[in-house]
Length: 332
Image (cartoon, rainbow, N blue to C red; front, side, top):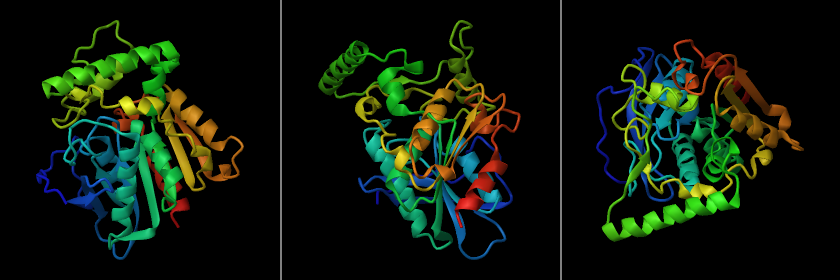
């Protein structure tokens, strides 16, 4: 196991709860990468507990939304971990700020490995929560890992679709995809020669130009605002991903077998989220001609934007009561 330098003081973007015990844990995925996680255990509990692994959003760290979800669900009686994916945050892996549909799905499975062997966790009652781009990854993990009994995808992105087709499928053509591949492969050649990697994709600095699309303003308001979601280790708060970091998603359809998921799935999305079409289409594809549709559900939160489901947006937009009801029903 790689030795990681983990921050021990509380450095989250949300207040520490006095209802749970918090600690840092590490575990190794099957690619040999050591992952760092925050574990939250409800106080005044005994015996084994239903357990949840939480990750996301894409480009965030566990000190942001995944930690908030994990701590809140621990307050509701679950043992939870919020983990940093490979190559990001406090987790290991080089080079930094890379993403992979394969390795990042394995990250979820490695989290399930850990929970399956945690003495306070009930190995028969394990669920996962994926936020934003990790919502799609959670569905991919649920299609692959039969130990996962229930999955929540919150304000989800299909990262394969958005990388291949652009936002709202506006770049869905072979010519545009080819041009993007040309540019990224030319950059690979240049960066190999120089021995360095560039970053791109971080959120726009505040104030965001008035003419910018709404979703850019939505992201910057969360990731760049110190009093809301900014964090020094967050890719989206700072310089972004390795410039070719998401390249492999362009021809890796991660939701290919989502309609074969037998376990329970809840997709949660905001009514005003620019990303709503990802959740709606993922749900439709998951239940289409599926014999396992009875335990699948989609909830649309009225008036909520994409990032309102990161931290509540100041209006308690995250439907935690619904998540508790869902997991209590299917983790039994």
